[in-house]
Length: 568
Image 1 (cartoon, helix red, strand yellow):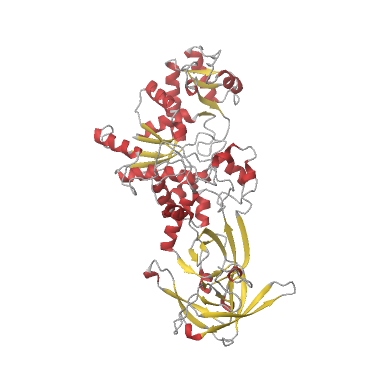
Image 2 (cartoon, one colour):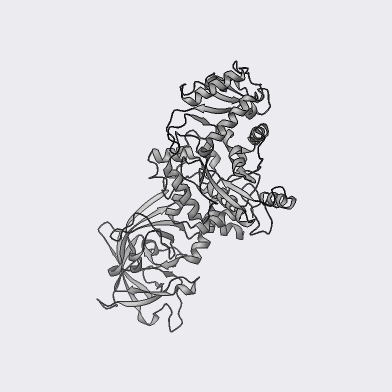
């Protein structure tokens, strides 16, 4: 199995192979490098909600810890007080728990290491490896150079240790304004690696920190926090996405200069998914600009959005397992994610009948006021799910698409003079068509064969189609929301590069249907319950649903493009 980039997606579960990250863990265990310890970590920044890309990292980090008898830490990378919030911290924990994972010990916070990081910064100043720069951020950027030109050394680069220590202490004490000074590592402004050209370690930000309050106005950069936090926690395998590969030399430089414990960093390709963007900045803009109703909008690729739409943690874990771990950037078909979801929901979801675009049917030879209770199977994949009764009466609803007055040759559903099977019920024949003044079909007059109860004829005659239906008198009236891909453009790189990226939003990503007619038993459905609406797809109860106003979200359609591709 390959993704669009041709990368193998087998991992140790499906293909019998072990990905390169696990190979590294096994090699380290065999060599005794970490005394057979396995400590991983998942370090999100609490400035937004987790998305499907984070799920890949969660499954990898927590999964490796479980597989090799180790532990995984949850650490909040909370070094930017202007963007972070305790609500995001709580949401991250809830999402990880919902996915089925648990972290070792208490939640850890990079902000809890501020004092130690500050002391290490002082150590680097004392050793001549860090200095306070009073250039503006614009000047620092301009003097950094390019891949073709070396950088220009700061005029403050050769300040004395004493002056640097004094300025750094005053920066912490709040004696300077934001941006007036920064602390930089003193490495090499001519380095071929731009990351090593005296990177910024600390910046001044007079902002309230959701956890540390107003104790600090001096905050470390992520690159000065990442490696040392792993070192403090005794992380053995720091597993990062590829964009951090170039930064590894800087993390190693800090740790080497400080003379502290060295974790092992390994990088893997992040998840790119067709019809989807993973940019927190863009997702935040969509929320703030009202393009979606919130972070949990079922169109969003966030864990919250997927959960509300009806995705299961089992399906997401299966997807992350199947795409595997590679060193090469590629794009994974969203059809594979939907395939994993269908596989899980097919096994676990009870079947129900629902009519989304109702067309009235009157069974003229069925007695008025009479109701027959018919037995229907809850889940053919799960015998223990049992059966239920569905009421059959004189007036029914069928899908408008299941009838054509003048059908083409290969249309086998209901038409004038044609007999079809009503699911779990009887053979029904259309005798007459009722139209309104505009010529629209508003009602079908039909007859049924009472000898075909259960859907088979004693005389052995066959019909070519079976359609679903709902008893009009017993129907639950509901709102149904039909969700589709968030973006029409399949290639996420095209969307990301386009300044006018919003033009790629799918205008049909949400269609809301009112007055849908659902089977009687769905009136008792509760928030989050998932069902297969026969022939239509998989649906779940939305969190805003109420008994008097039921709301169902379409999770995924019945069509499985991935399965079709695999058969070719």
